[in-house]
Amino acid sequence: MIVTIFQILCITLVGIAFVLAFLDLKLSLDGSYFHFGISIILLCSFCAIDLWKQPLEFNLKWTTIQHALFCFIPFFMVKYLAILTKMKNQKIVLGFLISATVFCLLFISSLMLYSKEGIATPTILYKIGFVPYTLFSILYINFIIVKNLIYSQTETKKMMVFHFIGTMLLSVCGMIDLYQLLASKFYPFFAVSSSMIGTIAMGYILTYSFADQLVQIINERNSFISQIVDMESKLIEKNALTELGKSSAKVHHDIKNYTFSIAMLAKLIQGSNDAGDKAKDRIKMILESVSKISNYSQQILEYTRVNLKEEGKPIQLIESIDGCIDSHYSDKKELFEIINEGTKRSIIASKDRIDKVFLNMFKNSFEAGANKITISINSRSLKTHFLQ
Image (cartoon, rainbow, N blue to C red; front, side, top):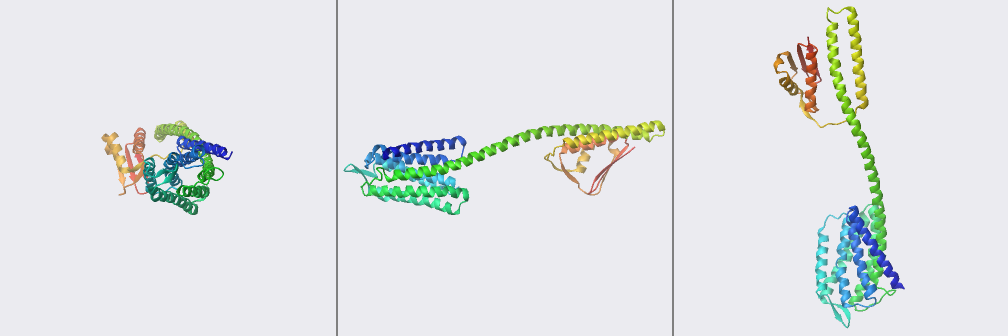
């Protein structure tokens, strides 16, 4: 009856271990669940031999297989503890892997155990090699756990408490079985080996700890996904507003150019001696309408404006002005007067945009009838005047 219960517990634990390892691979976790799952599978495989094949003896064949499996258990346990504790020195993990491989080959080569009266008996090599390896593994694993139990943060400390309890149970039970093997005597507890009791106890304790952490990870991921969905919807809305803002800025810019030209021409007519009082009144109405159109366009721009930060580089204003004149008004250079008060005034902007600003400014001035354009640059401002 007791053996059957432990068989059921062992099978269930293996199933849980497979699920944890699968979830680690499927969800692209940090790898600790995968290595922990492999550790539990190896421990349960070790104990399954005692449950199904040699419940009350040390048969050479099955004991050899048990030890070949056991060789890799410290490696996988140290590996997942290294991930959990963010261990920087990975050489010790590699050392455990190399040691596990060497001892596994020694057991397969029958250099570690031999049969004496039908009972698996350790050789000298087993006593001077594998026993120290086992003791060092137990001490080192518990050292990692105790160290992080003392110095780790709250969440990691909670896991380390479960690890400390589980590994201490497994260590004590494993040492009992190791002593029995060295003494070639078997004293089963409750009709099962001590390692079986320690493995089942540690397996379920640590599985609960990992499951609790997994629930937290899934909750954090769900929260993160919700934030991404929310940010994506806001980004789509912002992109729409950005496009609307850009379109509004272009429309506003074109309206401003036209209204500027209309206003300049109207002022020129208004100042002409040929214009009568009635014509001047109508011109005044035109100027008021132009002002209203400009204000309305500005209001639309402010309403739809989105704060966008475009990448820009420092641009020397004098260089940009000279470049614009050379490119578009090389035949009218004598109409430009640039007053630079010895300062190299620069702004952070897009070169194409700033060139377009000066081009439109000069174009509007000439369309309004300017015969000369004066540009004054000082440390505080940029001023542009045009003269008829």
